[in-house]
Amino acid sequence: MKSINAVAMTLLSTLLMSEVCFSATISYPDRFQHEGKFNAYLRAMYINTRISNDLIEDRFGGFPDGAELGGTGIGAILDYNSSYWAGIVGFDASLYGVAMIDSKDNGRDLFDDSDGTSGGFAKVGQGYFKLRYEGDGWNADSQIGRGRFDAGTLVTLDTRIVPGSYQGGRAHLNFTEMGIGPLPGTLGLETAYINRTSPRDREEFEHLLSQTGEEIKDLYTYGINYDLKAIELGYAHGVARDFNENTRYGLTLKAPLGDKAGVVLDTQYYQFKKAGQIWERDWEAGEAAYDDDATWLNINLGLLLDKLRLGVSFSETNAKLSNGQLGYAYFDHGDNVDGRMDAWTRSGNDFNNDGERTWQLGAEYDLSGHSLLGASLDGFKVMTIYKQGKFDATDPFSGRRTDVNERQNEYRLYYRFDEKEYAGLSVGLIYLNYRIDQDFVALVSAQPDNVVSGSEARVYLDYAF
Image (cartoon, rainbow, N blue to C red; front, side, top):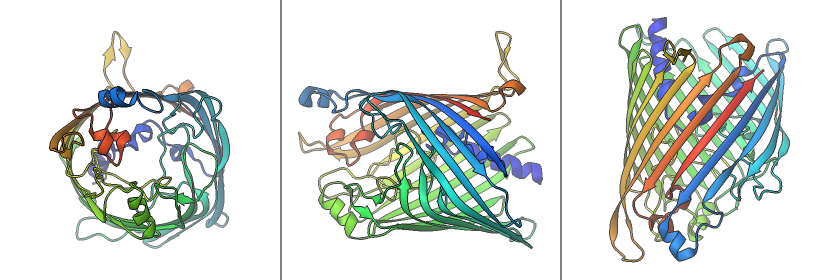
């Protein structure tokens, strides 16, 4: 059973084609944290985004920040992970440093100040007390302070040079002997509370903010996950005070197909609701994503065949907005707080406009065991993703409802060095091309940055000591 479960779980984790994969598939800092030691992690990153829209260029003279966005930078994470005193209590701390090499007027969240004159920063990204305890059939762990918190509907993104941080606390409680019949089972409970955030592109720990800059006092969230290996059930709920309320329901079915193959059916349903006066004031200012509530359904089928992984996904969004704009499913808990969104179709542009139906095909292949011109390809992985969506929107010039089609092609190449002298070094290349066939959508959308044709190239170079 151990090898069968490993196959199914590997399939699930690898095929989750969300934005987290941009860096997590290349490297993730927590993988290199060793208890009782200092751990160093370096990342160099280049991101270049080119956008185009004939309507905006002809009628408005172009985009405010220009048609080329992005920058180049290098960063470092220094982590200290203490041992646990009496096996229960410890303290961790992290120092983050970012240096800007180059930046356009809009640095694509690489640097907060991206006007070309500055942008580097250093901060204590983490500093928290940690506790853990293991009993008979259960275990628990928690952290209190400033750190990278993942729980419920809250997530810490690591898709730029350094990850973001939150101030507050989180806790996990796992019951490990909750099986049913022959199926081993684990019941996991998690919760988190935060009242400050330090996004990945800046130094300060600041208040949680709405889209119009209003202060959100705090956020609490919790989740329940029941994993029976072949069946997994998930529920998560989060509330940003007086702003919004997000809920996720998940069902995953996993089955092995021999020793090196497996299939997974993953279904996720999201509900988003307004939760008070701050959201209403954002709506009045024309900055809200929907009137009262929104939903996002995501259905995915994944297949693992030895070194080949395939995935097909479907999603449908409903997010009515009656102020004249095109709504969308808003899954964050604030302008500077990142919400957890595991929908497979959330890669690159979100394809989450009101009334949109989206199809996605993805494939990944591990080139280990192959060679090119006599050179070994061990350590290389390639991935391609194709996505298309369709919805309708009102053309402000004709007043007519018009069909809108958007599509995206994405290509990724990863390489992790296995040679002893380069251990810890990895490289990632990502290229994305996005096209939408109606330029007017950028004028009526509540998320105009996500409905502009363009292309993007990213390069990651990571090294963990």
